[in-house]
Image (cartoon, rainbow over the protein chains, first blue to last red):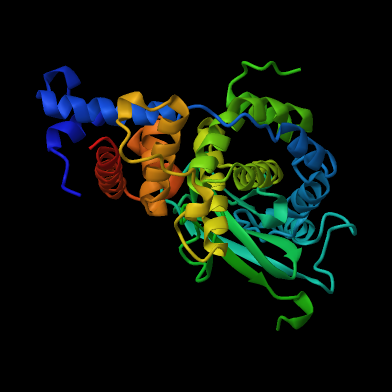
Length: 211
Length: 182
């Protein structure tokens, strides 16, 4: 087997007019082109009914709304620390009262980690990003469920979520379109789709096991 | 109701919104190419049908994980290619078993006088003799008509690597075909 003439390779790559090839190369071009055309006919079979029957057995791949609502509710309702700038002395009582209210849970129904749950902390450095969210196996890779915050605009985005204890795969979605693994994850797994891309891996410890 | 000509992005949104039947549109759109690709990769129509069916079910179940529905075709080929590689790995070889490939015609026949079916058999056999990576690159480029950029999305390989595989596959195929007509 000898290397093909570069002009023939160029013609086969569509980078050169095959009409410009010398006669012997044009014959080789024609032979390969004809051979390719012979392979183009699709096999006369169909797996459509088999696939549709299989997927009808399970639920559609929609957003897990229950989990999404729980995460969103927890995220919106979790206690937050606030900084109150005290100016006139007479606002002291009002500010102290406000801080007390905000530091307390909004209601008694706020999810707290159960026996088999833990708190996951997500932190990423994305200077200039307009939005950062986390998608993963815990929310069916759905967007719009778990947003990170960068309240002080320093490019460090962070957020927390209560997740079932155990391993979870996840990615950051930056500005709604760029999927990036967490550079701080430390553990990564192949995404299973064969192109060598990796998801970040997070292992959530049960809250009961955390100090 | 989403129509058959709707863009992939629209069909995917419809499915993720709960209309699982809309997946039939994607099957009709991509099944012929995926079956052709898997058949060329595995050299066996039954194994190819299994690989494509498993890939489509897997794609449906993980559709929310498709990061760019505008490149759905690449994503489906990637899943199917991965499935084919797993299938080949289970055979403990990257090459198609010769028993799976159509028999060679009598080498004394000239290409021009061969029946079309014989020509197809010859080309399939020459393709089957290529290592899996070169076979995949050749099929994606010349049978599925993909650009090198799209091939890179499907295979995860770099474009110069893919060009080299396609070039080597062409050389091997041409050498095999010239053997026949000599």
